[in-house]
Image 1 (cartoon, rainbow, N blue to C red):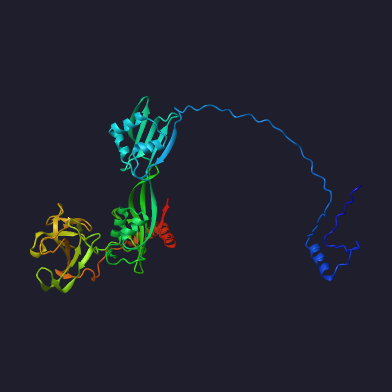
Image 2: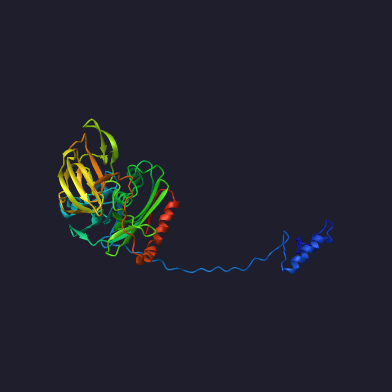
Length: 444
């Protein structure tokens, strides 16, 4: 029985139940008129409408099989990199890398040049090449000093040598928020100790890192990291840093001065280097401040205390707080072992109760800011190991924590434009660190 098919209809023309076309209302005519004027028409195919399938053609093409040949593993050894884990031995690292070669282990143990491979540091890696039988063909290892140790199989023997270094310096951006101390925060975020000390030195003229830090203070530091064979092996200079302390923001950017020396300046070209450090020791605890009336623990009387006492373990290094010339080194009554340094202008400083002096310090010698001149002790009238530090103007003792400290000279005006262009991308990275959580990021 033939199947009836309905003819295509325009969907905008409805059919009433009797099969006859109905008249369009005013709104429907308006819709048709709009579609016609805009060149748009909507058509549909009624169900059960037969549609011819498009013609298809089957094409079969024969493809040649690829040529497969065996690879000589002796000419193409398999390289594998194994990460060193805490508690690893070189034998355990090589076993994980698929090395099964007692002769290689004997060579590593006996050869003096190869012994550096035993200086394993968690996080570093060892790269080895093995043949299909697990024999060691070659080994590459970056030593803790940044050298590349290479070991190569030559027939049934091995040769150890130090190979050319594939070295690169990248910038690492680190941001942290103070929770207790600078070093505790630095340890929590993995900031290297050398960078932490350099950061403290950079802002030592403005921040006393024992007295001034507050919970919630933040810092960001952009520093150089040296990579050998793709692995970090050491840190370099701080190229930019920012510290937010007690609501005050401080910044520092590396720039070479006219003599080619490294110097750090603020955004407006002022030197970050103060003529005097806030403290003669990197980290210590102030036990007695400057006072005109303090009860002396030994004399048992009220006496003026014209300096600041810092408690620290015996042998803690003591730094010169400014450039100057040593005026006196020796023993002086209640001061015990004492050093006096004359600085520019009317300024001088005194360091007392030292256990010993630096071998290079003697009367008339020049010292630089931050140079170690002696070590904490308990000589003279002292109840325990500490440093007595005095800051003098025209030989009159002043409170170093309250007096305005002079600063180094500003950047020369002719260099300021080049300085701003140089630090612009560095300032952008520090601004990015401000917007991110206090975590660690890396920038190439």
